[in-house]
Length: 123
Image 1 (cartoon, rainbow, N blue to C red):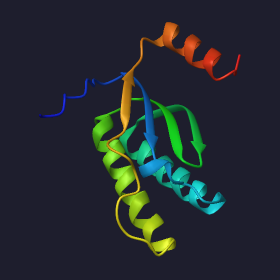
Image 2 (cartoon, rainbow, N blue to C red):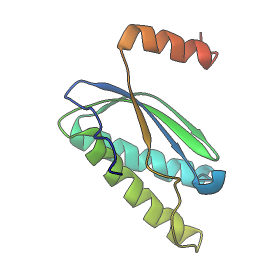
Image 3 (cartoon, rainbow, N blue to C red):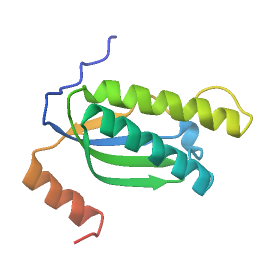
């Protein structure tokens, strides 16, 4: 069964969720987190994609991104492929790091953000 196409458009706001395969760690230490954030920063700048929030938990991550000049799928492919190659090299491992593909929730801004922030106990 084919996957459903992701909905995306310039200016769309996405809540991205991604988990490690078998709920294993995708960030072992600050080196991994810093590497991920550095890659994210470079790609966001190049694609004019805005990032409003991120959470890097040892076994999963959350990003709140607004589509820029490149589709979110392109941003995520570049980000995740580069991160996995570096992670696998650094930790002398091979194979998949992430479980399935990332989940992207298209947000209706005000209502979704209020719920997101309340759920995360940030307000």
